[in-house]
Length: 322
Image 1 (cartoon, rainbow, N blue to C red):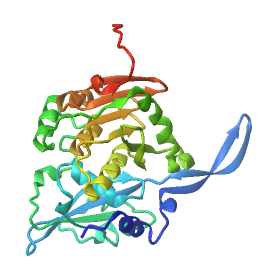
Image 2 (cartoon, rainbow, N blue to C red; image 1 turned 180 degrees about the vertical axis):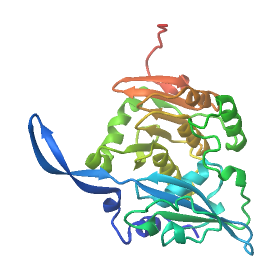
Image 3 (cartoon, one colour; image 1 turned 60 degrees about the vertical axis):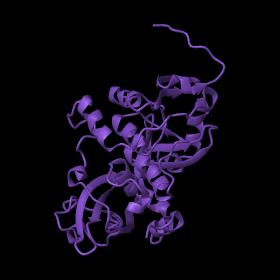
Image 4 (cartoon, rainbow, N blue to C red; image 1 turned 30 degrees about the horizontal axis):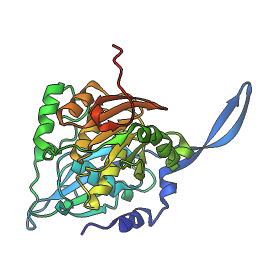
């Protein structure tokens, strides 16, 4: 059975506190002008996480290594669940029978195929760097869709038209987007997210993703060295709590909005994506294709709306200055 959120947290932190796993201290030479002294600094931990998938009928189960991602340890089960959701491998939380850590080095794991992380040195706790997800016996798996970079990344060389076509084949059914938010609320989000970034406060080196309601209340936040991992953790938490699709929250990104992040938001049912950075051209195409509100360059009282401006409410007029 899928552990609840408390069980997940206790399991992931039982042998080592989460804070100790997400950060590590190091000595640095700190310069100020022509003077230097030795001081302690705190770094965000970056470790590989291998994802294994168990699938097939009860009498003929198979195990396959499907991905290795570099991530900040913590909320690993949510990360894996969010990854499977946003990649279209699962669509309902009941599709997952069990999520568990696999003990031992990658070369010792019980996968029927070569381990994707076999040549990686897994630091700290190798048994915490491999997670296996066992799907319910009746869940069918498309092996073709288990190749990690089949169309999602901006470096894959696939044109935007092909990427959008591929996304249409796996995305959830369309729905009427009624999610609205005021300009005043939008402008308040960066400070609220920043105030909740505990690990960033100690390291200065993490991306964050937050989920807000229309009134600007922060419902959840996740941090990670990878912006896509932060989103997967956030959506994975909702998925494991059987709260997807998420039609009544916006996704706030501490960085830029890429195609991959819009894809993940779409798979999770998110109606609005807001970022402090720039969107890519393909991210804007996804927003237009699937009628998602997309806001970028949110800084102070300024922001750009690339799609869905009618869902930003307030007493203001729009002046054209082209």
